[in-house]
Length: 244
Image (cartoon, rainbow, N blue to C red; front, side, top):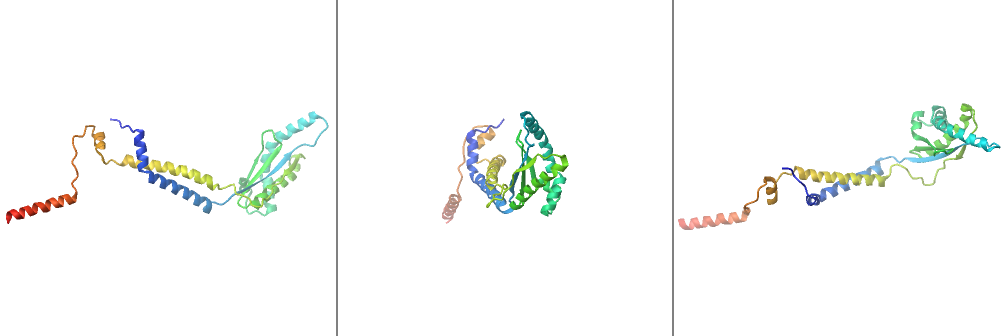
């Protein structure tokens, strides 16, 4: 016979295990908050913008051709910016104790569609160093691209600036705690239903009817220990009186 669980049974299970669900949720939030604030290293982000633009010409047709040429070169420029040819010089100028591969992981290069502006974004544990790496990378690229590709269409549009009170982009304690709350809630609900599934004891008359599939004919009332003791004492007294 297949077992069916009603919505009422589900609510009963959740209500009965409400303490466990609340405990797991609070515990997950606490752990996530402690890890975010005490153990995870803050990461800061800063960006510089590079403009890719040919020198202006007299005719509109030439201007359009130059813009299209610049847009086609941007993908190439994005690769060159993160190449060892550029990053090795950045490491040398800033005396960084990392190699070009490690520096590459700190830098992200992106651009909006059909935009001549390239964003060089740097993430680092030190906000001042993030600014220095972003600006130095842009300066080295602006200088080296002229020799590498024999072009003069790159200029720094907006250098990175160190703010007075920079805020880390990672970790995000509020987001981490919110995710932990959801995970803790789901874990608590899972534990509640697992306990209910593993509990095979029969606690009520209805449990007996549901399991055996037959109607209940009678119930034996439990006899308390005090009543049994009083009955035993009374019987002994009566026996003593009869023998006496």
